[in-house]
Length: 304
Length: 304
Image (tube, rainbow over all chains, first blue to last red; front, top):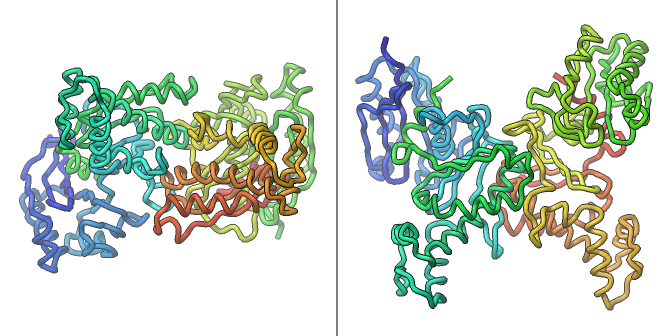
């Protein structure tokens, strides 16, 4: 018997990626990517987007469910994008209505992309059995999601989980301390003040790749910087854990390459602030879907 | 036509209070209170507790739903108390099973007492129309709950919303900074260091009532102390709002008598940290049920 297939669509500010996803294996077929800008500037974003969907559904006629991940805020009913900074053309557009009319008999599921990526970990990572978990993405910003009972937690008004914007040190929110740009500023600052031996360049040109590589080679300053980042992340996780009563944490995003080097500090903070009720079940893992997280996450919206 | 009636039971460490609640008006009849200790030391807590319920149900035969608020953690299915520090005799006791067997045809609803009190505000406060809100209790500790879509938010494992235990200043959790004892320590400390005119006693004997009264009379030091408390509470609220996407906040508990004096600082912090998306709908109110919050909250578990 054939496996079920879903169409997964990852709408990003740079590219819109889509593909047919095997619900059992997560294998992606008919992968297609189109640059976002040309659809935007055409003045007919929804039509072009719909045309691309039409081609996919034409090639895979058995597909009846389409999951769409969007980079921004969506209404609580998950039918209308509210604030998609990268594609303001679709703000307020009744996307699910429009697509359902154009493709009768096909179901469309909208979700914020971080939420979708979080859910993807449950459906497409083999040994991922937790039905409740916090998902954090480290990158340019610090994003997040919570999965509760295998469902995206939307909170009160639909846009829960902004861990990058909880108060952190120095009168700044978390992502203004450990977002990509800010952590490089921190690294360059620490490098300038550092008198010891280090492979990190002293001319203000430290990169995140270089910072991870140096840590991997045991560079003390690099390890110290990641430790500082981990400490701030750990403190924020404590708030999330206390508010949500969730003990599993997945860390993804481009900067999760630093996972091994931030983990000791994260665990130190959790150990400092939490009680045995939380600590006995606590697990901090690295998210595993990687590059396909967006597309597979979108497809995972079609389950149940 | 008669109104629907529920039996509400507020199980506290000192007293177990119960009464028949009119679902429309919140009027309490047949109020009964029994000290908790004598049932505990009898070695038959559940039997005595059941007897008291039997008398209520005998007097009001039309009552088919009973809501019970418990001061501690409950299992996710809301059938078994897990960790009731004040009454460890009932930890792990299948309370709903036992009561359902003894009273066939009657439905029993268990909930943590802060969660129940939060829900009570929705059902029994006349002009309370928000279906999503954060509820904070200020007292010996700092407790909390979240109501999402008129339901108690239980989080991942059933015990969400511990705002008193999120990281706050000085390496302490929030309630170790602004719980009753801690805020009096703070007040006495500030009093000692204060050279100006104040009606607060300098001998370490400041009381919370005195601190509220002084603030009401415009005492500058008292206002400053409440301001400091409000600032710490405000910072914690920012995390809650960002994580839950809820913009209505109710503040209750014994120390909410200080509401007017902590509010300016709370609002200042929310204004500092939050963006227009949150600020335009933000509302901080005082919880209104007061002394009956526990009993009415328990009864509110019976709705739907």
